[in-house]
Amino acid sequence: MQKHVFVIAEAGVNHNGSLTLAYQLVDVAKAAGADCVKFQTYITDNDTAESCEKAEYQKNGQEENQYQLLKRLELSFEDFRKLQEYCNKKEILFLSTPFDIESLFFLESIQIPVWKIASSEVENFQLLREVAKTHKPVILSTGMCRMDEIEAAVNVLRRFGTEKISILHCNTQYPTPMEDVNLSAMNDLRDKFGTTIGYSDHTMGIEVPIAAVAMGAEIIEKHFTLDRKMEGPDHAASLNPAELKEMVKGIRNIEKAIGNGEKIPSNSEKENRIAARKSIFARCDIKKGQPFTEDNIIAKRPGGGINPMRWEEVIGTIALRDFKRDEMIEL
View (cartoon, rainbow, N blue to C red):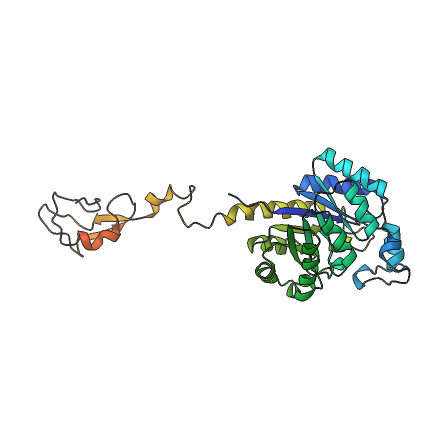
């Protein structure tokens, strides 16, 4: 059975605080063929101290700190209700990452089916505990994490009621340098925790998430935007609509290419076996009663006759009739 990679189109805060732009992001994710579109739900006053400065990638020349930035990008709970309704109408799954307890309880009230936990919340015990108490599946991002930190988070989730956990390898630098991607870490996560594994990508372009699928990722998350030139912290490292569509297409192609692992001739190549394989032919005219020798027979295309792997069986056998040069021999 062909594997289906769950593709999360990460809108995040690329709506710039506008519900209208958020609707447009939903449309783009749907048109690209993503499985879901994901936002970020938070109350800035619960999530970030007023004195908190921006991360380096968030700096864009504006005279504001991280608290002020997030406050400006914040959507209301009512906005998220409308977004979920719009996603239902467009037939694409709505998800949003909670960053504080109040936001989590709101998302639970609108029946979010899966929790996506951001890398920043891996050590947020209270959030992990309350998520686990809902007994819903969890997708856990692990940017900036050591293995012991991931293990501690997984233990909290399992202790308080989460049965199904998927773990995403991630690097939180925007954009992530290629030498820091370390896709092979997915293997360590799979071996250590025995969970579904995936990859949350912040590199430029689409080749790394596609490569992650070839290496076994079953979930891919990628930021996208309406336009990389828009003002905001995540736009520059996000895919534009055409790139998002191309990434999903590439992932779907790799899903098909991975196959079931059984080495057999494929349906498409079976027709090539006759034309490309070889049979044993007469190298020269052979008279009835002559033995077949190394000098008077040869392996040539096409196949369909005596398989050249029977060469030793054929050598020394007596010709039962005359054979012309380039005639397929028979025993």
